[in-house]
Length: 266
Image 1 (tube, rainbow, N blue to C red):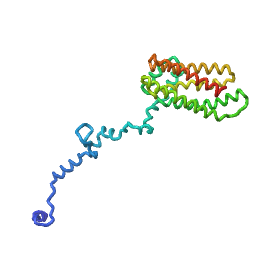
Image 2: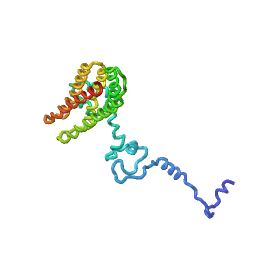
Image 3: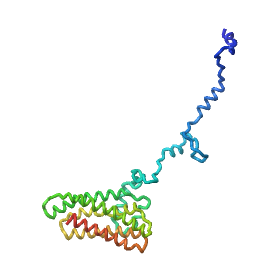
Image 4: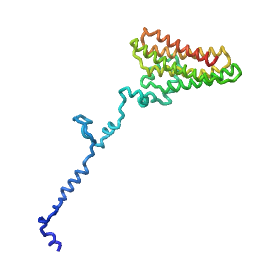
């Protein structure tokens, strides 16, 4: 019965479908299974990384998701543009803090050359602002035996410390550029920021209610901080014609130390 049904002619029937060849089906399925998905749209050209690329290629995935750096003015307003200047850990910061306490080291720029940071600059300046505002009021109480919290200490500490730590390095950067000496603004900010770290422990010593001892402490601390700035700046510029700028940096740092004594620990 089955053989009779199989031998019936069917080519004359309307809508008859020819038999599917098993080999072609298997071959087609095999080719589809091995087909790779393509990235759209394709790039023109025949160089590496151009044209159709497979999704499974690690190089293409890395190139696709790689964040391109900002090369125009919009990068100034991008937070990611400044992340490289905060790429430091605790050990690096402590090492630089210890170096800033050593005024005769003279190799601070060589330590930060590969990775200058702004973390220490901001952290030290902010800490010093709050230290001066709080301990300044406490020192006034110890000398006058009458407690009155002066809020103006906060404003004066913020304006003086932030202004000094930002404006002075910025002025030196433009002066060095104008005089033909290569300078990095981030490195100058980094060095001047760490130079303020010695004033943080000195502020606690200035709580001693003895006027002469306070002057001795602040002059010693100011000399150490000024020597750190001037010696490192001299080694950085390496130009005898710029010796006046080195002396001016020493005097500015001493002026800051005297200002801290007179305004907050008088």
